[in-house]
Length: 424
Image 1 (cartoon, rainbow, N blue to C red):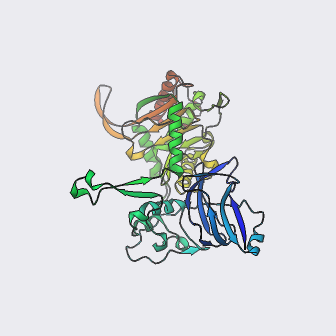
Image 2: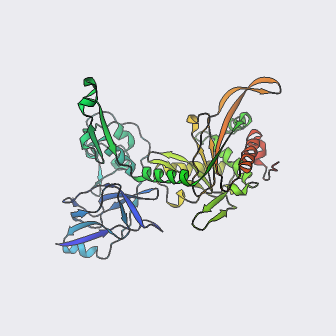
Image 3: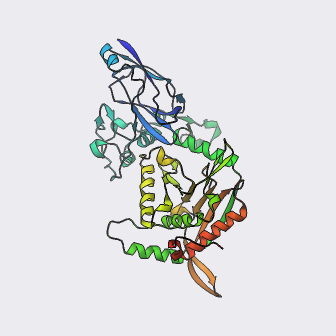
């Protein structure tokens, strides 16, 4: 017998450490080569790391939420001499970016057979493993309805949960009976959930953005009646099965045109050097809600895309982010961000700037309401644009002028398709 020390692998260019999201083995367990042993996260990418050798686990480093430096010991195996020899020098292994489940119908609520295994491990994405831990579900008891028996989100919805005390990563702490009425004492309890992974990263970045950036918020209402008529006309001409247009690609296309006249808003601030980096190309970040939290995949070179290409790219990067397939490169490098809450858009919002950018534009809900036009009350479709700017580098006048120029394009949508727009 011999020992094999597996070190934290380098998971991408510039990575110096990775956060442990979940362990899938413990000291004393026997694992097979290529079996999933740990999930880690760097930046916004969750990564599944397989065992480099077969053997018994002697020790592991860290608990979920801890950060381990690249090249530091992560797990120690006891192996036979042959296995150790085959893995000699292989301190760094290729980790697999976790694939995500495809939508599927909810499984029937019947006794679940054992989950399908591949290479000795349960087939499930990191997001679904996290959901199972939080819900107290034993994945071994879940029947996967995905390809090859992979466990999908709807499989977890239909699965029974273990008692709360068995949930990994969260401790259920009963509230003392003296602190609550007797009738509620049996039901009242609290849970402690450690902030790790994407949620921790979001918390850190949002706090840093609000702490360091003096936000200037500007909200303007836009009459999108004509824009909506154009959108519906274009959707009517689509073939069956083709994706319909939303407001988002039309707004982004208009924003690209406007930035020709307001280049100071298509900028990244390099705080370390004290330099504003102005970009000719427009790389639009599309704020996307995912099961793991908010991600901002990037549509690159939006200025070179037509409406349909832009719509396709928005769908592509958003779906890759939601399914946890987006690469690190696809989640970095935006020069300005657009965010939309869709039907939950409300009247107005104050979006947080996606540093190191200096501007973000948010779409609120479009609703029909009475307005006065040429002395008469008429019903028009109105949508508010909520924007935030870094007031250190974008003056209030310029911010307001940019949004007014965007409003003008959206209210006269034919002008969106004119390459050069003269801004008054």
